[in-house]
Length: 332
Image 1 (cartoon, rainbow, N blue to C red):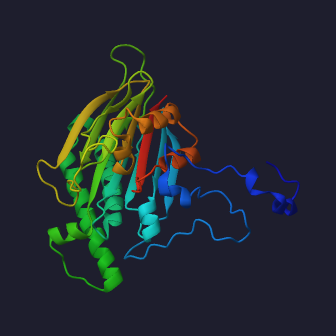
Image 2 (tube, rainbow, N blue to C red):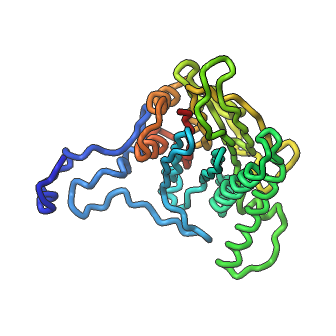
């Protein structure tokens, strides 16, 4: 579609516009407000307007995304506010962070617990602080299998506490120190971190692959994706495409018990993608064998264009209205 001059833009009709949306099955009530990136048929018509979130410390845009190369890795990341929060005028509670050193890519995906009014701050603090803490150890020469993961999580938990107190002091003038339990009621987040070698692509063979560290707290998930094996979960699944009854409880920072966090090393083959995601995508994905798994597999076999990746993360599907955040890392 082209226009000879700026004056010709008025002659472009709605039929000329292709909506930038990604539907999986029945989009349900999403169809009433989407596609969000199409122009209205009538000039100046109200379209896709959602309430601005009103809460202490809100400063998060509706959607953020990134596309990057780091060493021999290709990265895509997107975090988008679900329609439940859009219509309610509440902020996106998910977040992600990417951090590169000379030899490593450190990535995080965090999911703020919805019951906490300030959980968007917890997600941001946990993702960013944890990535920086892991990167600091890596730069000091600590091997991934020897990283002090508990200290990383302690630093992230302290960052959540500081974020809550800073927000309350700024918005209400309250400067007292809240008990940890009270902080967790206001702000908490599940989080998963990945440490991926960024060097040259491994040679083919039985031992080929990158040794990747995963560290997680709560119901965020990590997967590998390949043409040969499809979706393979690396963390425990809580749902099966909406077929199982799931609870609303999860381990989350800033509370940190001995059994509330997990770490694992795995080999990422040269033809695999590692994908970190919050349950806004993970719940619909289930075990990866259903309609959502097939749709995302078809578009994530290779790194999508970054804008397209964001639209795919912000998929339309009936009853799934939670925030969505995904980081995908392709070896090349």
